[in-house]
Amino acid sequence: MTAKQFEKVAIIGMGLIGSSIARAVRNNLPGVRLVAYDVLPAVRNRVTELAICDHCFEKIEDAVCDAELVILCIPVGAYEACAKAMLPHMRAGAIVSDVGSVKGVTGSTVRPHVPAGIQFIPAHPVAGTEHSGPDAGFASLFENRWCIITPFADADSQAVEKVRLFWERLGSNVEIMSPEHHDLVLAITSHVPHLIAYNIVGTAADLEEVTRSEVIKFSAGGFRDFTRIAASDPTMWRDVFLNNKEAVLEMLGRFNEDLSALQRMIRRGDGEGLFNLFTRTRAIRRSIIELGQETAAPDFGRQAASPETKKPSGHSQ
Amino acid sequence: MTAKQFEKVAIIGMGLIGSSIARAVRNNLPGVRLVAYDVLPAVRNRVTELAICDHCFEKIEDAVCDAELVILCIPVGAYEACAKAMLPHMRAGAIVSDVGSVKGVTGSTVRPHVPAGIQFIPAHPVAGTEHSGPDAGFASLFENRWCIITPFADADSQAVEKVRLFWERLGSNVEIMSPEHHDLVLAITSHVPHLIAYNIVGTAADLEEVTRSEVIKFSAGGFRDFTRIAASDPTMWRDVFLNNKEAVLEMLGRFNEDLSALQRMIRRGDGEGLFNLFTRTRAIRRSIIELGQETAAPDFGRQAASPETKKPSGHSQ
Image 1: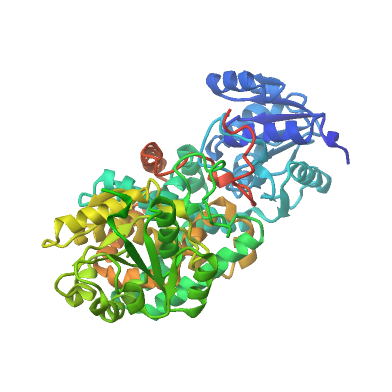
Image 2: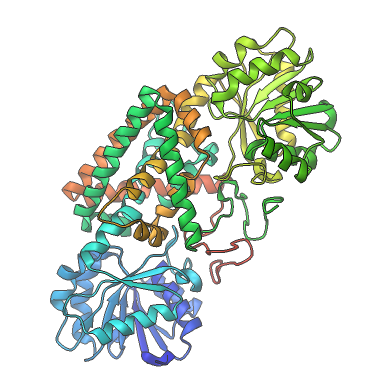
């Protein structure tokens, strides 16, 4: 298949993910006509300034009307209203997809509004940063990351393949699974980690015995890494937790059980139990690095400024 | 004061921190004679190969006998035995210090064995990486990081100033506080974050519904950052939790209370409550970056290899 499997792609929502897709399409699929829509005038203006798509429309119908692929890059809470406004204007034979972090919800919010002749193929590129907005995006965000496609049972297999190829062209590996399984997997690899990061940062901020200034100064001891995650987009994450309630609460239940056991080990002074757990978790880290999903560079010791240009001396000895 | 405030420094334990101090002393205090000791023959051999100190001794008494500053860089659980073996051989007027992550325990493990004429000035450089061993160290690890000195009430103020100056020469900012307050501050900024990171990585590893391979593949969604912390040295962290039990359990209690409230918000679908917390935590992140304790580079989107050389395109637009 050629780079022009789609002549025209429309991106709805030009935040971190939408604007990264735009940049990645520019780099990897140069023949494609690329249009966008964003609800916010400031974002539309900035996208036009950045010149990362051919046109950023003020009206959603103008963006989607003759696109062959329309990608929703908006918070999950806005899906239904957006689908209703947009779908009637899409051309026959087109594909609508998305990038949302929860997938079960696509069945109730978007799917009921999809007219005959339009294929809805939900997807989720598992990539991101803690930054938001069109300036935060970059073209390599999806390279060597996984994109999960969660087609409904009656999905057109050709449409699924087209979406797969699109993500592969942006540098991603693609896996296909059910929306339900996706939501369970992401609950443990993404949603609960975010929840506990948000939680500990909140706990630290509320302490009376330890000042806010002390928390910030001594954050290099581990806390700092949680603040990175806890700086992610509030609207997006609110919508994730409201729309993956069941799996998140289930995984949180397991987390809490395990934490109680760990708490008991500390209370009882069970050094062997602690040592065994801490050794086991180290092995998982190694697997992630081996699979190319992470670098082994010593991030804890990262420089306060421009880590890309200043390398810790002596590390690679 | 000159670079030669100490003619000879001895480092006991040449892991990540000990070997980083050695490298930093070489870089920043070139006139100082630097000797080391490590209990493991393999580490001693490697240190000799790396040539990061003048001599690495097989016997601890040979390393400490005429040093003016001796720094313990070993797990807290080994402090008492090491102190007993070492202190009788130190010269009068010398200072013994350490780098341990818990400080209350210095009063019961080392202090009772300190002979008259020796000053014991505990310290804790709040810096590290998830890697261990003499190869993992690097000279810039302490630059622009905080080092906390926790002198006892009867400490000689001149000795405290000497230790402060030593750390300042290695690039650190120094703060002085009581051992008890240190342990409370670090419980929230370091110990509990490590505990919950170890815990969630353990929880994920034990799931039956989600395979280990899925956890690893899709770790870029947030989980990955926890595995970094959960890859830290098991012995060191076992000793931290065994020796800061009270403060860790206290802070863990607060964390659990807050997590229950958050869990309830999710169960009840309280979007406003979630949004408010998520917005508040974002502000703390900003303070940490402003204080130079972190970079704003988009680490979530980090490259799988050599992040120092490959910069995400378009990010700084």
